[in-house]
Image (cartoon, rainbow, N blue to C red):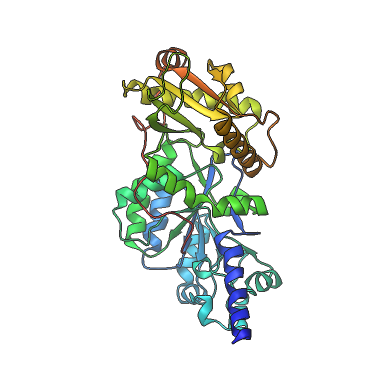
Length: 393
């Protein structure tokens, strides 16, 4: 029993490290570029031709992770995928979870599937998965954005969620088979192209293996989604470099000219989108993003003040924000949180670790940043009511 318990623990730890966190997997590209990779698992299928025609109609290339058995049964479809400029990679020979594969069969499963990248069925890992992939000359590819196209949910909700959480450099998980995938693509492709995203193949995206820090970021995505839903946080614009989420709430402190409880909007930085930007790029995209925030403010006359508590508050002076000290307890907590997020997203500690609150009146904000609407969807886009990633494949 002790031996069986140890083996089970080893399998669970392998799945936690290598699937849930994705440590060492190729799961995202550069956050500086609006390029994204649309990837399709489980094909070829009876829907493959329709997917190819839809991608062609929009001038988009994708990456197909094919199951070996199905690829052998449909060689003409595999050839057509390649001829139309898409990338073909391995999803294993059998679409079988690791629980049903002995180490020997997992080795055959990986070795018999041609390709530079290998994506395990459902993303699941055994203690041997990475070793066998390496011995077969393959790199393990996962994803950082789920389409949820396997769930029985309205296509409108799936589309809204995908656009809300799509980021520069994202590897998007889709499936070749469900009718829902076709409906989702038909709805979402025009929008993501209009917003400025550039769908490319996985090779063109140039993904990099996830370091421990980036793997931890991947594992924490679900917490952000849950916070957004619980607090009604909306995005100000859906473009690749729209940098702010907005939380309407009572002002938690007294500020000069604004008593505690005033109707306020708290700014949340989209750190995933800003993590690789240079200082000049960050300034440029912040100005553009503030125009989207202004559009939200213009449509909600109740809001009296915009604020954010962060070690970055001092930099807000460049954009007309005032600063004010926080109460000692809140200052300590905000400073510790700021140091944690600075390391998590940028791999560095803040030069000015003391957090302050930066704030600006509604009137001053609208004067400085006249509302702008390109690549935006109105008043602000709320997080959809769908389950958080990462999960299945």
